[in-house]
Length: 165
Image 1 (cartoon, rainbow, N blue to C red):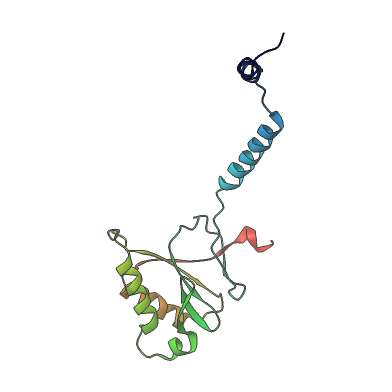
Image 2: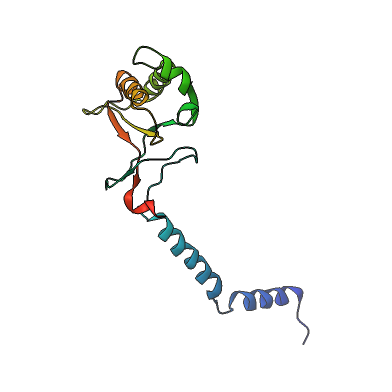
């Protein structure tokens, strides 16, 4: 018996809509594997400060992990705040007062960008400097930070266990 076009269309539609559904488990396993690896990598408690190869941090037995905050990096030639050069080490070492002008200007600018209230212990800042940095220059940097309102100063160090690595 010959069927009309309409009857054929209904029959095709019925067959297509009444198939049993199936899941592709291989692709689901791939997705869950990637998800597990992503969660394992992002759940680690290791915190790493961005460090250039020219700065050799001093070794310490401190166990307190670093927190995300503004970082002053002192290389052999430059003083950087957040990766931007604010002063030369030679100029800063030869300045007579305890304030480093370029560093003070940058820290004042960073203070003006922040809208959160100042904590009671002062704004936090991390100084990342070479272990051979003269104390006179470190004292100038710390004094400039305090003058700009960053009185909670942390010094970046390497953990003693990481020394062999």
